[in-house]
Length: 324
Ligand SMILES: Cc1cc2nc3c(=O)[nH]c(=O)nc-3n(C[C@H](O)[C@H](O)[C@H](O)COP(=O)(O)O)c2cc1C
Image (cartoon, rainbow, N blue to C red; front, side, top):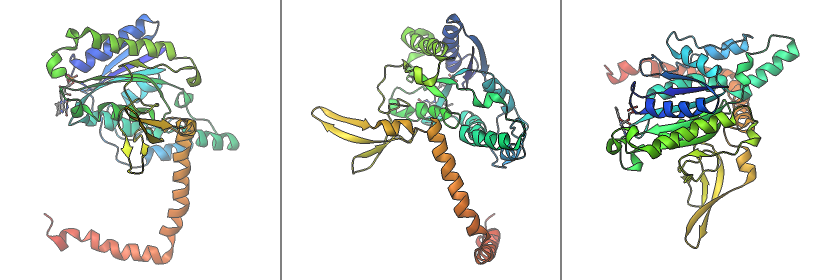
């Protein structure tokens, strides 16, 4: 059982300490652990060049990104793990760009529905199947680290980390919101924080190898979330009383109670959360439908001629506006 710990913070600083604390506990519970600090790695942003899609479409067994930087080190480490704990600093209310670059490069190109459909076609054609590591179920845990005392200054930290579960259909076993580090000084001075991070490592080690349906653990912070899937506190709200978790994409209903409000979520909605197989297929089908609508529009001769004519104006933007 391999548990990977990634820190997106400075070497030997707070993210490192907290993710290592989780790994110590995972190791104690019997896991092989690996730690990587990503700060010195070069992880460029996705160029949307579609190279990874072409790898898949032409029948490659492995799907790669064509950018030559350190992303591949992290991709391989992730492919080899059964569970992952990520600690990342909050920069400007959300998680810093290095993490988002990694997510953008890894998750969409490893979308479970797309890869399952690719394998189904390959099987039918008698072609080599994709690397089986792409289909491994993995568990995750997240630690958001922020300096601010006010929790609203870390509001998008945990939610952004949870985005890492989608596409690859990972199941999260817990999270820790390590805000207020400016006052804490060092996580070493906060034994409760260390204990909560350690509980993430134990939960990961205990979950690995079990089917998702058997694991209903929540470790780390006491659960004060609203969404029953990601346990975050964020909601999109409409004045009709309908609400939606922007992370998991599930819809619920705001209910007024005697002493406040609650949200009710149907079993049906829980089953279609973005990190479930059904959730990724919902998105896959949506994309296939877009292709069916979009391609005939773009290949229609009248539309194609109109677009070509109009594009000339956009191409001459600099001349027309004096853009330097
Ligand atoms: C550019 C930048 C922006 C930051 N913005 C926030 C913020 O919005 N909210 C917050 O709580 N902390 C913020 N911080 C503080 C970091 O989250 C904090 O120092 C954290 O401990 C860094 O992780 P590390 O110690 O593992 O490197 C910011 C730090 C930097 C460098």
